[in-house]
Length: 459
View (tube, rainbow, N blue to C red):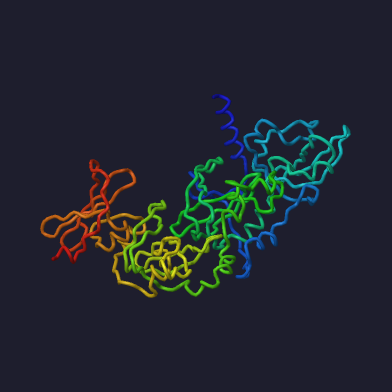
């Protein structure tokens, strides 16, 4: 217990000694405000450029044998490095130096030498304190060692970070993984994993250093203002991992495993580009993915709901694409997987789901007009119900109710099942305006029934 506390104090103290370091970037969820400079200008890329071309043209892999003098790295110790020290101080007879005292310090490569005892040293100048350090190769000569995957422990290659900052900050990307991260504390490497919908449009707001294995930390922001990040290996210089180790869950730690460039996608989806920016409306009610209160959820969207198609993201190895849709009134973003492939002439189905066919589900042009207040639009974006909302506005915020309950004098309730097992009851007056809400903590899950329309009530 005492050792753990001491280690934590060392970590914080080490961090506090750092000068302003623009390589350390955090999502805005971190408890301490970030003042680092995340400036950078993104170069324009050709619309036809593909993601793998972007990587191969901009990020070169350097084996240790090919390192050039003054290549820049940052010390990013992991748990193992707290026990096994990496660097030696030549001015103190080769005394080992704690990795934590060098944490977040920048090291410039200064070649390799042979010591008098025959050991090979890889030399570095610490940019922060202007002192020399060396890493001693465990066995064999430099030439024997440099072709292996290990490289120099603890060191994250900053060349990739600099290029990624220049090329990506301000760029539009689309998410490809399901799991991303948010920072929980500025003074440590603490993070929380969050689940995101694949194909979400995001903008790169900062690029910094991640870890030794995955050195490029890419922070993105979605349209709702939520920030999250992924640490990725791009050139894999000194990552300590081979290509064949980026499998299973590790694929998300490659740039192409977590992000897709907008420009690359436009080449894939050029045949569908004519639909982007067009207005459509639903001919039938359908489930769509949206985000409210920072969480992904599925809503039943009613027929005659109008959208603008913001983007079309092809799904790999599939005839389906993901539509990014902005609803007219609320400006809320929805996602829907559809196919543009013709339906079967006999069954009328595509994989047994005719409603996934774009031409079946959507009609071109706007549907029924809906007038919403500014307060209602804000609530709709967050998936909340407020007083004086109309039935249309409640449907946009919450989807179709599980069932309805008729009262007296035209008053009626809509019942929604909540994820915590409780029921949300939305109360309307005879005109269809919200007059109150309540949570039923005793009722069981409401059975789904066909919604009674206002017209039927009036009869």
